[in-house]
Length: 319
Length: 244
Ligand SMILES: Nc1ncnc2c1ncn2[C@@H]1O[C@H](COP(=O)(O)OP(=O)(O)OP(=O)(O)O)[C@@H](O)[C@H]1O
Ligand SMILES: [Mg+2]
Image 1 (tube, rainbow over the protein chains, first blue to last red):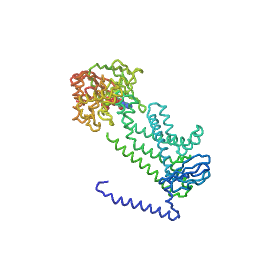
Image 2: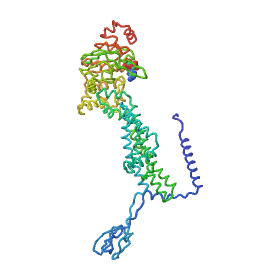
Image 3: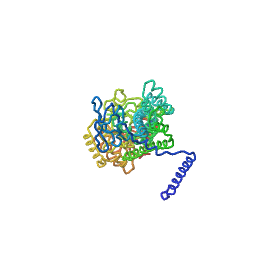
Image 4: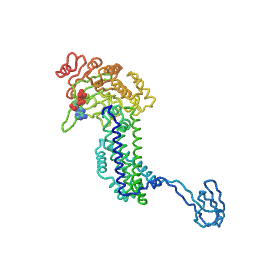
């Protein structure tokens, strides 16, 4: 492309195509008579929970001290036990001197809570984070084994990588949970994280191998000729340079891992995907929820891409 | 200082065996400067790399300061501390500054403190004439400057022997001089040096002895004068005619 060529006509074309596609989808959806209920979605992010405050015994209201929004209610039982409950003034259901039975509601306290979508997102995030750390460690070890001079190490790494890359992640998760999980008595979280880490590790191993082999042999020779040992050479010379080269494919792998983590929902881990499915069973807002879930994954992966982009720019100082 | 006896290095690749070094015997005295010349593929680099263990030779013995490299008990990293090497392609560490290039091995291998290593590094950068580049990354330096840093990096380990493998071959002609000057100064200071080079002027000026290699063997040995005035072997004459 030459520099003088105008780009705005192409931008307009892009916008037109996107609008036409959106309109097409919109039109199709209208034909099938789907009732959109977007207003139901926000409560699955955050909701206001009302907790009833109940009297734990039969007794009387001895005193109510209103203090603006909240009120302190002092309750006395027949055996002179005293309990003070805090409730919201507006929700107050009792008056001073009133006699109550055990478990009668005195009032309510409301509080914002994380809805299932946020909880699921949180599960997805920490699950992916832990799995990524282990995948990185596993991948580094397997990658180093792959470039090692020792035949046995190379063979082990090869078997690991080939087995993992040659089978579907979904099947691996089933094996981890129903087979290994049963035999070694592991929790579903351990199985899910383990399967994701093993899966990611195999791909990370290949990335490390390629990165290490892309460093000119002269670097190793120079370091070794200075008397540095092979581990020192790896740590100080090869890996720092390789890491810079593999940052883009490595981050791509971790982004994949976040997306792939949605598969652990099949072993009943309540991640973002599973939360979405659970919400749908109770609301039938199928379209809205899946679109929102997809958007949430997209936000997370885009943010991660941005972080990596800035890291790459900072690491480029010695180029 | 260096003693090679009947050194053979075989390379096996795709079913064929190459005798890259084929029975080389020679001795290098302390403080001696030996220049190795010879046509491409004659095994000069391979022989040099055998001396610091970058290649493991197939037969024969090399002893450095009395330490036998072929001995299984020899710690090759100890030997390499005493044998500095300078490569054709410089091989500076691109992710480290010039100063860090010079201090890394001092700290990791010689276990020097940061302060001591940096003092040594700056002293050597003064010696090779580029102290002002200490904070730069290698990619910002010219080829000649990079090679001078590479020499300083090897010297920082205070080796007893320096090996040079065509140190000026990758340089633009106008930068060859500055690198050769540093090497000449080293030679004057009494460093034991083995230099593979095609720079005949350098050989004539500083070499105590010249080895001519061809097909893995040392074909002719002599002083620079001998080579420039009365080479004996036909192959030597042919080679010199091409490079002079
Ligand atoms: N790693 C290797 N594997 C296989 N063969 C090799 C290897 N290194 C060198 N050789 C072969 O050994 C022979 C000697 O090579 P060497 O690099 O020592 O020659 P040289 O004299 O340094 O040549 P040049 O002047 O081109 O650097 C050549 O035939 C080369 O092809
Ligand atoms: Mg060579």
